[in-house]
Image 1: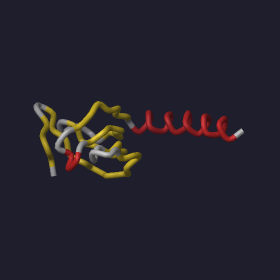
Image 2 (image 1 turned 180 degrees about the vertical axis):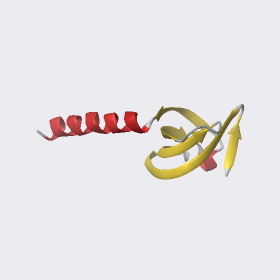
Image 3 (image 1 turned 45 degrees about the vertical axis):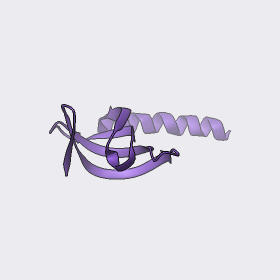
Image 4 (image 1 turned 120 degrees about the vertical axis):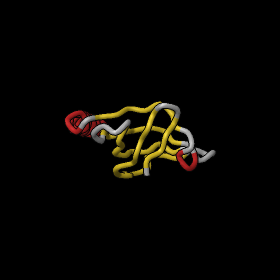
Length: 81
């Protein structure tokens, strides 16, 4: 289902997971989102309860997601050493 916040329209293509949840119901989520009818992008963003509000976030293409994974894997290897 497409939702609208001010002039921004979005539709959840895939709900991938919750990274963390705060006391008042705000959740940091990782999803694939269709913004304004464009191709879906990977999205990390805080959402209010029932997705009535959204915080600032970051969107990534598939190539950017793959590069981020590579960088995270390197950092985790460093932390584990």
